[in-house]
Image (cartoon, rainbow, N blue to C red; front, side):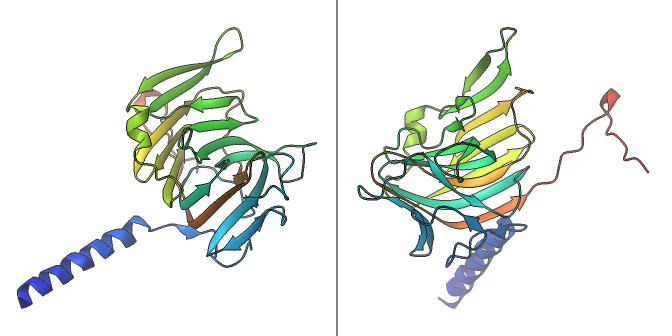
Length: 251
């Protein structure tokens, strides 16, 4: 029995060590108590049960999509991890985004969005909020280019069935979301399952960095929550010079 206990203890220690290693380099971007470091309309955003909470009601609707914006700087190449729960309506995680002018309020942004909805028909897709619309569906790796006619073209490769990806998403319960953006390769995961991937070769429109924000959608009453939010800045990959060799840094 003593030997079994020791082995179990060693296994637990190893698991804990792996978990800590997996989080190495991440920094928390929400303190779990206040909205310090975040900027959103106080009519809709608050902290409840240790989570950033966006809420609309029949008596307190939003006139348009509104967002709470992280003030910690622009997101470029990064690994973002968080937990979310949504009841009613739809939402999303904006990244590499930008402010929109002359909208319903000053907290309106556009850009890449890791989609979240209560159905959850669209949870996990990559949507372009005021930014080219749906960019990549669940189970698809989508390469974006622009044709000679100036129109956006999508070359899709299926890596999983939509229905199979959907099975990983828990309705009206807590789910984990992960977004990895490196260069113009953007990959999203829910509960450890890859949901979609975008290779953005639309050189005129694509974005290398921008704001991080959380969405509260106009429409029916809804409640969305986010917690355990942490981000890790990823190093830029070294570009190769001609001949396949790495370019040398200038002295």
